[in-house]
Length: 365
Ligand SMILES: O=C(O)C(=O)C[C@]1(C(=O)O)C=C[C@@H](O)C=C1
Image (cartoon, rainbow, N blue to C red; front, side):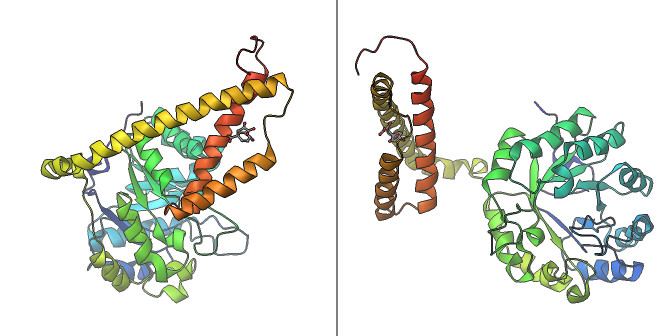
């Protein structure tokens, strides 16, 4: 069990719908000042700016470096909010702590590497600075979880996650594809953990940032980190995905925040009638699954006796095709049908494969 301090109790005045904004990269003291002044109109609670930028290929702007840390004080003074930067190695942590940065974040390309995460953790030992951890670039929940465990082991309890989407070469709509089920799983695995959404890196294009921000809120994420620049088209990094402080204000004001039903006992009562029906249907589904797997076992015995392969491609193709069509007629999506059928088939072949190794005498085959 991890020991987590809720984002509201970090002592920084952050709320349950935290809004983090600021440029992708700190470029100059004037740039920080202009952006911070623009952000005064929005309920920004934490100011972000990249100082060290991990870039895919060398030659791109890699951040101003340590010199930019002191410019963050300008934003702090104008907005009266804490500031956060990304750190990727020991020297970054040391410099950020020395400069009085309030919150650190670990980027997706760092979370993916346990050696780097451990290096950061060692540099943090003995401090209690809050750390936000972006998801690793690949949708590996264990790797994301591992970063929190490493932080917790060196005594960092003020932690939060950031969902910035996942790299997928076939994805066309997003720069980094969102996987909304992953932050939900992570929140279940680390009770009390806030997970913030970074629509800028998910979208890669400013036009869809509003829609993705609303989806994040709908899925119960705990806040937004949105890259903001006074002149986005001329930003030194990630120009296409940055928005102006004015656009941020419009997006934020259009968001609809939704509540958890647990805080509304009267609605809980009303929902209960539906939930009882769902309970019953789930029980029936499980009974049917159990029955299906009993038949699978009988087929498994038959296969063992007659030396047949567990995986039967032509039959499985037929099952997939017919069930998907049936599901579509019943308004179930192809994606859902495929993942359900994959799960069923995986369990069936695992059971039958285990049966092949058994030595008990065959009874009913
Ligand atoms: O038909 C079989 O041979 C089965 O064992 C059943 C089943 C299934 O789950 O429907 C399982 C494995 C095979 O690859 C094909 C189908």
